[in-house]
Image (tube, rainbow over all chains, first blue to last red; front, top):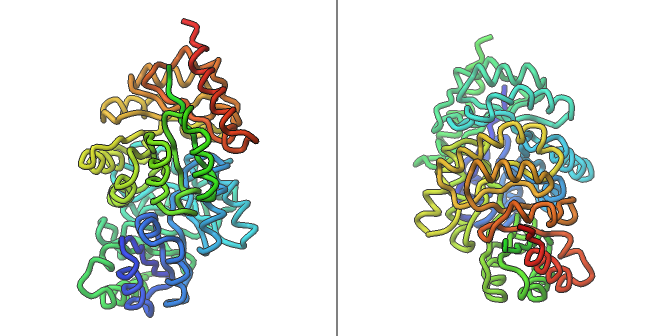
Length: 217
Length: 217
């Protein structure tokens, strides 16, 4: 079954660590972004790993020139197991991050199409090309949207790489609609539905069970 | 004459503050990115302002879903005078940052086309559309490349907004080739040529003089 990844987009160290502690038995990976890292520092990655001993990915959506991408990766990958980069800034910018990741033996995950409505304007028209580029560059995984299952399937079919798919829950993505597209190397990302709930542990458990039971073929 | 902005992409607080102190008489603005902020914390913005009393812009190239963009802007604009966002992620993501900036009375600067070679792949084909979107959304300024003067001119003509143009110096952009495109509301961004030099003060002074003297019309 696909892995469950929590998007820990809270703004407070204590809250973040409390949630990780509650959900740790039901998650396979943690995704931290700039909201948390700017509030708490990158050391939060080590603290999370200490609590749950799971893979932690920096979702920095790195989108700069190669030189700057390289510097960001050098700092982030000292702590995290992988880093999410944008593909639309071009092959050279992605390669710069891959070179750093190789040195640290860490993962590079490349965004193709995002999950929000605005992604339809400029990202969707080039997302299949980005999926091809991801395959060619042999990144470790790609990001594709759970909010558009047909796009998720198309992009995954092109890239033939593990997928991390955001948008499940609050943004409207449904596990039932994507479960048959995914396999055990893929990650389903859930954020607000877990961390904003009254009982993150129960919600994480339910998502984990859904991932386990819902495969229909 | 256009303003001189230093891109302070060093990885160390002490080094950053030392350079600001050396160049403060010749620069009009400072751009800090994630390399420095991840190493030193956002408080570095306040320290820079204390030394030079100049505008400080967070070049975070924010490129996420509206909800996450909003959170990043909320944190960054507590410190900085403006924030750089990507336009290619769509109108909704840019608007989310604009809403926060309005509350703080700060600036939003939107990237159209970047200065590195990889920007030609996916960004250049949509950069004119992004320039139109920037005009429509009334962002405070746009980013366009000094490394391609003809593109800088075209994008500026479409957006009719102040431009911050990176790529001068190390990346190959030349003040002589862009000075006639720019006016006093625009910013020329110089990074490595200043901060990697033996004498940042002298180099900054020379760039400032070039901006002052080189206008030929």
